[in-house]
Every structure is written in structure tokens, then in C-alpha cells.
Length: 146
View 1 (tube, rainbow, N blue to C red):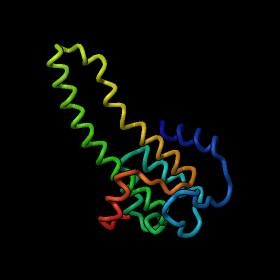
View 2: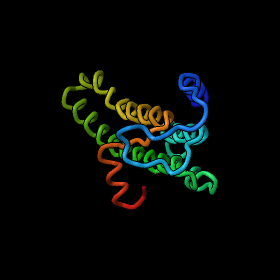
View 3: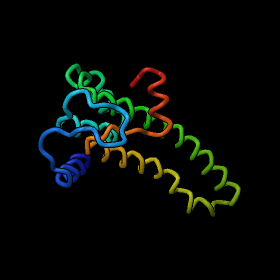
View 4: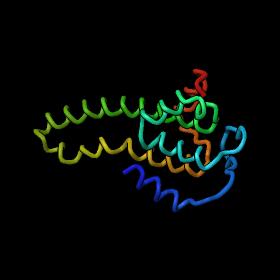
């Protein structure tokens, strides 16, 4: 399924050559951003934990600043999504119990909300942007991970 999604996005944004930094982004491009960099950045967001770890462990990939930046960002986003999911489970359970299950029919959407930023940031990364996630990017920079 991920390969199908990547193929569809590649068809939508089929651009050859280098991708430069877009206006409004805060990180300067350190060298050229290749198609492989953009694809790995997209996969880091879409596939979650596995691809970012592979990027950070692989010597060839972790030396690519664009790939490393998005791998660290996607891991941070995954951790934030995990914390959100735990809190959503608690809220879902409490409100479903209080309303005798009536809100359970509506609150299931809480579990799909983390997919929205994952897809959005994945597409932006595939377009060659240095994505800035509002609170997360600042935290990761202060920790020295970006």
C-alpha cells in the first residue's frame, strides 16, 4: 500500500533534478536534495518508526541532511502521536462509559486525527520542503537532535 501511495505521489509531483528550499522555511539546504532524499523523507513520515530508524542507522542515508532532518522529525511526530493516542483512549473510555456508549459512535474519529499531520508533512517533505512542525521542531532543535 505504501508503494502504491508513493507511486501516486511521485506521479503527481514528477520533478527532475534538484529541489531547493522554499520560501518561509528556516533551514538552509545543505547541498542538493535528490529524488531519493525526497522519497525517503516521505516514507519516514508514512511508514512511521521503521524507515526513520533505517535512515539514522544507515551511513549513506544519515549523512544526507534532508533525510536526517525528516527522519528525526518523523520520530518526534510519532512519539507525539503515541502520547495523543494514549490520551485519546482515556477520553474515549471515560466518555463512552459516562454516556453508556452513545458517544462511542462519534468519538472513534479521535483515533484518525494523527494521520492528518503525518500525511500533510509527508507530502510537504516529498515536495522538498524543510517542514517546521510548530512545537516539535523547536523542541528537537533545543535538544540538539536537528
